[in-house]
Length: 120
Image (cartoon, rainbow, N blue to C red):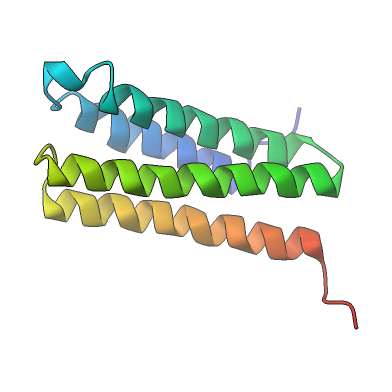
């Protein structure tokens, strides 16, 4: 088994240190809807980062990077909804966005790396 990638580590820490504590403050009515969607999206982001790290076929790695990027974007939307509903503060939203944007930069860097140098 491969060592966890920096993307995987960041996604795991994001879930454990940021998302789980945050979701505890959400209203009980959101437990099986918005909270669940956020958790599921975090799990899918972690799964995609594990697959990128463990697969050897570049095309498959790129597909999983696309999936990771999509989950990151979905999380941005879901946290935006949480802010609109006043479940989180603007400051917390900006903090979460910064962390997700950092993961996005890692994803983009990996995509460029696996695509290789441009062909002329």
